[in-house]
Image (cartoon, rainbow, N blue to C red; front, side, top):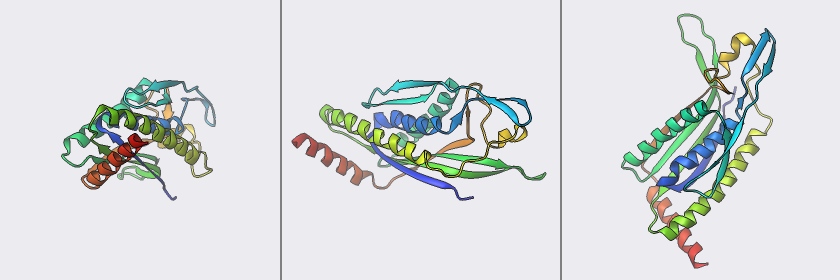
Length: 218
């Protein structure tokens, strides 16, 4: 099985990191989750509903839709918060990457642990820039909102392609495909990881500042 890999890239100021990452990760998981499975007997089940809620960003002109599960939101927020803190404390030029990997488990014989086989990985590259004044911040607020809108459309286009998804499991195998630990939603098994790098920051910052100045000159 080939693992599908998708790379997104965003440029934001430090106060926008959390909202930008939450909007993209929640958008992906909105399309990679289902309602809870309720099995009546082996091979027969019903699927619960999934509620959604609109979230308005404070530092970006953008509204995104997420699943209304508070449990899932806490899990994602915790990972994003750790990434944001690592990015700000790294002493680098403000460049990092957060990844959302979907996988399925393959049972192994004792004494070996189960094998985790990734089938889709979303990597979001983040460039953090420092802006000089409130006018630049306002322009950045609008530009980042526009870019996130483009990214959401891109995410939906990728997800709507007819490519590999794990087949619906039987009751005895559901934990090999879905995360059943949440009480109100059932996303595909996934994990969120991140890494911080120290390259490109200066050039990206310079490019963004030039873009802002060009916009002001129009």
